[in-house]
Image (cartoon, rainbow, N blue to C red; front, side):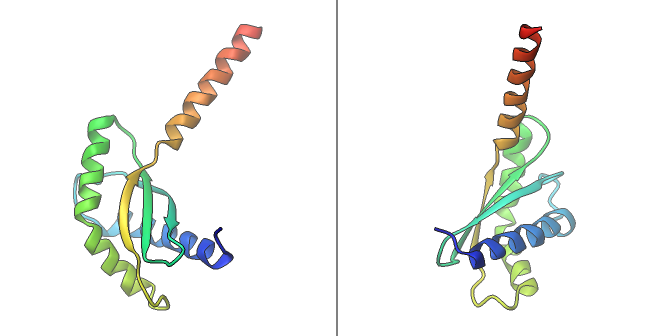
Length: 117
């Protein structure tokens, strides 16, 4: 069960990571990556960062490779920004396919609506 503190840290990490990914990573593979959510372990040692991007499977694969190679840079940048945290979590990047699932569900609802008409 997550506590309020962990929820606040996840939200703060999401905001900081969004800025780091957008402005500080210069790897061309990353492109237009968007940080959608962050899940932190209860002991705050590990953070799973979920990202999404436009494009097909090949672009997603390249983006994840770029982010994984920049993980140590991202962690150092977080350390500079979040000095109030005793421990900066190890970061891992994962593709968030929930956006695609939402689009698919919306298309199914639209199809049902047109079939009823």
